[in-house]
Image 1 (cartoon, rainbow, N blue to C red):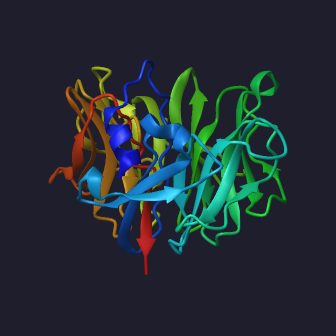
Image 2 (image 1 turned 180 degrees about the vertical axis):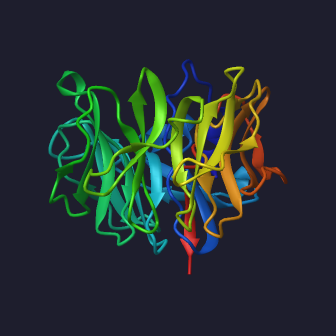
Image 3 (image 1 turned 30 degrees about the vertical axis):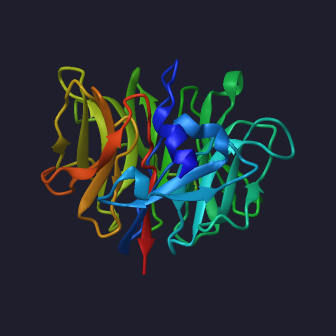
Length: 311
């Protein structure tokens, strides 16, 4: 556990940008993947059963890929996708897939661009992701096969479209978008058609990190409340039945996550509070029963980016 011990004593000089959550495919609850940013150059990520403690976590090797982020589980729970610095075909930021045991690492597509936030299609053949096009169009969402073919651009907004999340039933992709200078959760089909602003009528600000429920009927996400404090919400797939699961607090809540459990009963998210950081879980119905795993240094940031579905 040397690597984890190093993580628990690391100190950061700067904040780390928020990461995306992912849809959870239905099944039994497996392990939650979380790349710890304290040890980001180690070429690894960690996963652990919840509830639990960090010292019982499993180390998964990703060498030679370092700075791993945004780990997403495939529908069968046997593979992961993530992003990190390119190791071939350029010096940008690339997408990767590998087996859950750390074998079979493969870079997906080009390495000379800036690609982030992979999300699996339900059939396991494609990834949705965001590409930073800079002055050419900021962030846009694409799909690509896991072998690196059939690249398709889905959005062409002049603003930032990102954090794609593919519904488990395969019919919609939820994502972050900008409209009227506000951050929203939007949706479209997997071909980029029928775009809608799902949170348009909800009166929330800074909406980010959409995560589909395993049955594809609801979306959990983070947004600011009326006092500009970060909170966790859920809504129906059409933007109705808004429910507050984790009220806004002075703590840094929901910077990473929320992520649904495969059995549909729990929501996981990062909670950064004075003196500690936790991956917390709450009821997906009403936000009760807070639990999870904690005890980490306040200087760490963990991304509960995917929850493994098991048969």
